[in-house]
Amino acid sequence: MIKYVKAPMIVITSAVAQLFYSEISQAIKHKTDIRPILNKTIRVSILFAVPIVMGLFIFGPKLFTVYLGSVWESGGHYARYLSLYFVLFFVVSPLSIIPILAHQQKTSFIYNTLGNLCCVIVLVLSFYAGFSFQNALLMYGLSLSLYQLLLLLWFKRLIPFLQ
Image (cartoon, helix red, strand yellow):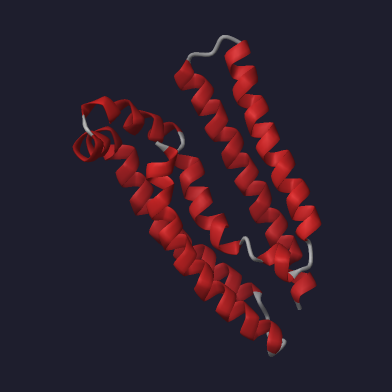
């Protein structure tokens, strides 16, 4: 389910990322303020993400059934549990070039490793705590969402390193 939902998102976020990279590179080159570019990119990403994810949230089971067959209806239900994560992924993904531009690749690697590890630990602990699959998936989605929010905050804190 995640692959089917994220694949079209990656196409869109890649296009937004290319624009962001182009604009931010010019701003760095000309020593202009980067924050307006960052804020514009976040707004554009939200404008794309919210309608798409709301459609997935509202029509997910039907969309999965029509596109992949009736056995995939549950995938549409599961997509609902991860909808907040999908919105935040849509917003954060185009900005992922910031650590590279700020020469923070090692820190980025550590954050990504720890963030993914924590999300998996939440999923495992949810199962050991006896949560239903749906509730465990919800907890996993919330941990992924928190991780994306923390990345966004870190990216914003890196902006002074680019100027």
